[in-house]
Amino acid sequence: MSRPQVTILITAYREAATIGRALEALLPQAAGAEVIVICPDRETADAARAYPGVEVLQDPGRGKPAALNLGLERARGEIIVMTDGDVYVGEGALPALLAPFDDPQTGVVSGRPISLNPRSTLLGYWSHLLTDAGAHAERAQRDAAGEFFVASGYLYAVRAGLVKHIPEDALAEDAVVSHMVGEQGYRVRYAPEARVYVKYPTTYADWLKQKVRSAGGYAQPVIARSPLRMRSFWHEVAAGTGRALRYPRSLREFVWTLALFAARLHLWLRIFWQVRVRQRPLSELWQRVESTK
Image (tube, rainbow, N blue to C red; front, side, top):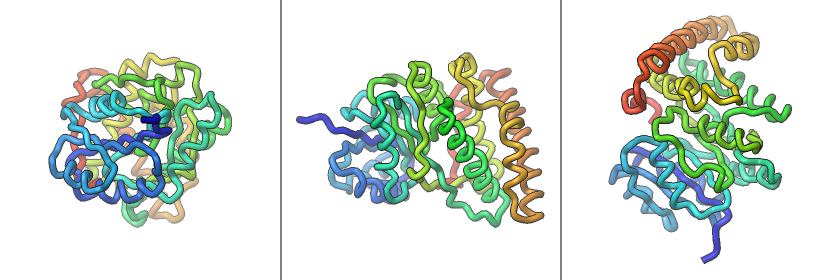
């Protein structure tokens, strides 16, 4: 059997209602690719098996890094694409994500998250600001300058063999993978046309849970000790304040931007206490966010 050029790993947990949409967006772009759904629950597995050619692996239930490790062990592709069962890609996303791998120095390629939340609400506005003026602008700038940055865990791809095992206590596995590859001398690239559509939290409690998982990962030793740095409270203040203040289109959105500054301060203080001081394990910090489903 010939080796497929691409393996697509989709991690999911209790996402029977959304895994179909994820697969229906990916499969037309994935001719010849190996598609693997990794999940612990029967409902999601059954929904995924309804799609011909999709392989389903039993997730051990120890968190996303462990699920991805299971997929990495099974994957046969030369390029490994990783995404989630509660998001879906845009048209042409997969070819755009794979194109930068024509350069042998490319190790990781990040897609571009697009918020599905309405900009007319406080948390919806925050999601647009953080994805557009925050993550998108930062990745585009760093990619153009040939600098290191962290790929988005909603949709990214890695050259096979560069990452064989992800630490199971990683809060932000996308950051860990990006650092592991960057420290081997490979570039992280950005594919802004590889769009992935994401529903973000609609309650402040869920927003905090999600951000503690993602931003908190940068405070863990595996990243904090790395010579490659992208994200910290002080970097966020220095690099993000100006872009954030230029983003509002109205007085209401300007007020919401100021509220986001307060929320981000709350977040970083919470991360400092829970990750740095208390050193809480992944099992306690990884809390399910229901409002993103």
